[in-house]
Image 1 (cartoon, helix red, strand yellow):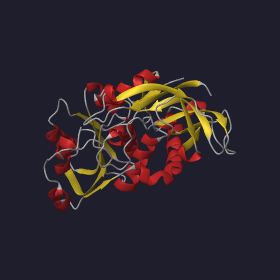
Image 2: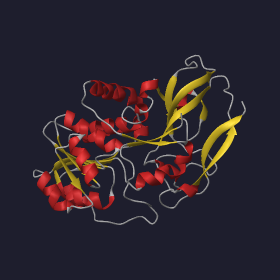
Image 3: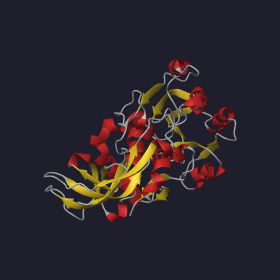
Length: 333
């Protein structure tokens, strides 16, 4: 095919949060699919907090993206040409297609089939964010009706889903978010029983008041000072689901803070990390449950959509500046 595939590539390795200058947009030839491959025209590109770790040159749960390579990302789009018997032109799919207009992929890179109406949702509430919230909460947190669940970044794509799922399962829910708008949204849109503003409140006393019997499950998306404040309020046999470390902008040198061992020992608590890549075999199960809850009106979500591939280079930095109001996506078509 002729030239015409715009791609966002990593051109410099950041030491903290990637900024626009760490990326460049180039135009390359649209690839012709080989036997067993299909060509997807991306309609939406996903922006994930976890991308920061994929870019880093230090040890991470995912292989670092090489300089000069297309930025790794989930995307959703339409199959425009297929040389695989299980797919045909006109199918809609989402998967690991990268920040680019077109992706020539194999079925192994496809996460799920979707449709024109669910392309955006397949990257959010019915994609990695919703699936992470559901599996991390149920597999690691193991909530029981009547327990208290506290979620950080409670208005975000993962946090808002985790809070709603905890509520559906009969738990009391408390959210931590930044700013009055996000705090209000936690209660009014996502149904939290209480929401705390880490920017304007003294979190320690506020947590003690909201969770008078302690926190049974802490769904941690941030680490750092917020989590240091939460851990003393764990209930006996509390569980900490470590899902993200968004408040730490770099891990070299390793940041120091209060020791957590005494809290875990005295409370007989458990802390466990969750990485979605360990649980991909359960994605279909999770999506089916999430879709059922959506159909019943139990799950709500927000999207923050930027237009055009030119928005990609600064999209991740904007996420960490807290500019987004919901799941951040880049719309190409």
